[in-house]
Image (tube, helix red, strand yellow):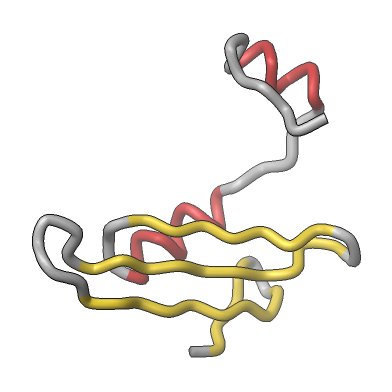
Length: 74
């Protein structure tokens, strides 16, 4: 279903699954010409949209300061 993330066109979809999964929702949008972002979670579309709209771009340094054990796909 068409929607927006902070004014950017996006698609959101939900699937009703069997327990223990229950509902699974995903949202995807083009954040920049070379960056597509997708988020999914076992929750409703309103909750996934809130998470998507609160994402903030960070530098690699900020990422590793916040998550020192995280790895990148380099």
